[in-house]
Amino acid sequence: MNSLTERSPVSVWNFPKLEKCPEILKPAISRRLALLIIGDCSVVYSGRASSTLDWGERLVLVKSDGSVVVHRREGYEPVNWQPPGCIFDTSIQPDGLLRIRAIRPSSRESLDIRFRGVFLIVELNLIDRGGFLLYASEEDMKRAIVACPSLIEDGFRPTMEEKRQPSGFIDVFGLDRNGNPLIVEIKKGPVRREAVFQLARYVSKMREGNPEVRGMVIAPSLGKGTMKLLETLKLEFRQLSPKTCLEALQKERRTRESALSHRFDASSD
Amino acid sequence: MNSLTERSPVSVWNFPKLEKCPEILKPAISRRLALLIIGDCSVVYSGRASSTLDWGERLVLVKSDGSVVVHRREGYEPVNWQPPGCIFDTSIQPDGLLRIRAIRPSSRESLDIRFRGVFLIVELNLIDRGGFLLYASEEDMKRAIVACPSLIEDGFRPTMEEKRQPSGFIDVFGLDRNGNPLIVEIKKGPVRREAVFQLARYVSKMREGNPEVRGMVIAPSLGKGTMKLLETLKLEFRQLSPKTCLEALQKERRTRESALSHRFDASSD
DNA sequence: CGTGCCAGGTGCCTT
DNA sequence: AAGGCACTTGGCACG
Image (cartoon, rainbow over all chains, first blue to last red):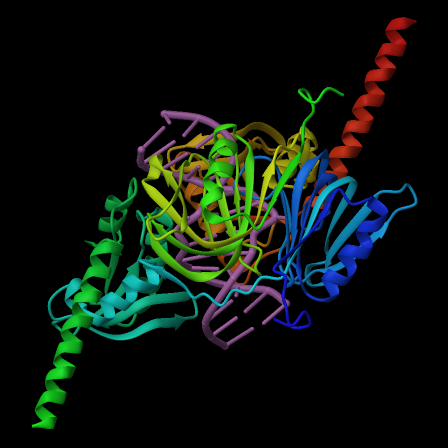
């Protein structure tokens, strides 16, 4: 392989001198590479709120999309961060410290990281085209209900997903076996009071025009006082887990595929 | 410094052979050190939901508290993760791949990371006792209001913070200048409908006993249709930003300190 | 841009 | 454990 075309996924600097760091960091940022800096730093955040973090040894990850995370020794969450869209400024201060400033113009927030010692810098040139798929989300439950309306009840015919309302969304909307409108609110976790109120808003709006409008919450379980609340508001509940939905969806897909292949068989006859 | 007492904050392995990795990772995990693995991997998550991530070059951070984050080239958030409390299993599979399994027994969730190439391993022994302080949170606003009740209105006397109710919480509770109960709900961002309903729940419960009960939302601004909603529910709004609260709190502290020093002066007389 | 809502939300707190 | 709620929530989709 030619050295011109060769790519190094990682380039490592061990205990670089502070004053050398901008020479490493600046080109990497302008080349839109990710950077990992491990060292002794302090952090000041200022924006929607403000925070200070005293000196300590941490890991800082700067990505090409302009996002930053500062990780401490423990904790799944970063202690400080900046979502994508930052502009960076790296410099050596008069006092000799390395300073990395990440400013997000859109929300006028700034993250100020000062290093008094750097143990390691890694320049990352990662190639990652791997697809990511998430299953059993609320989105999947909705898909399943639209594909297999009998999951709700026999005779249900969904007519609309994500019906936009002045007051918000409706997950699924349709007609029951008697032709009465049925508004469905899906939750993939236990139903909270809040979700019931949400549904109640839509339903009461529609009942002004038609008192026969039904409202139903679909979820794996009910939260604390929600059963009584549902009764009071004349709303219904149907237990359904994300897993059941996923299984029903897969089953439906298989039968649809087999029906499709049958049709092909028939047409080829 | 003696080599026995010397600490190396970072130990680096460059392009380790896959089969060597468990020898590096296992002792580090049992010594409760953090680990950084950069390489070509695929990830399967299974738990509350499930997900798959195809092959690609990523950064994996494993911490001593049993948390894991998998970061791609872009994005502030990890593509896969595991909150603290994981048990780890690292091994070379029959097919020669390196496998790191992070299982969280408490929620029966598992993260399965397979590497077909490792560019870099960094063992991290970070010392970090730096304090972290966050300012201008909703908590600070509450503190400010309790310290300077006139921020709400003249004559307000708070009697309770975080009053526990069957229906939830009350941020601040007190009596206005006329002795009428005043329930205060604090928001540090724009008020949403949801927050108004939350307050309405508390207030309507209390108005059953005393129709003079007042409810007030404190926030920097009002969301879309919340003004009308507040009027309908006979609730009040007082504009107050986290910044204003913080300034009032700091001012109050200064005057309190100066009053204190005066007292000391007086007592020493 | 704000408005609304989901998220494998997480974390913190209290019964 | 479950309930309630804030969070620099972030993210997406839409008017």
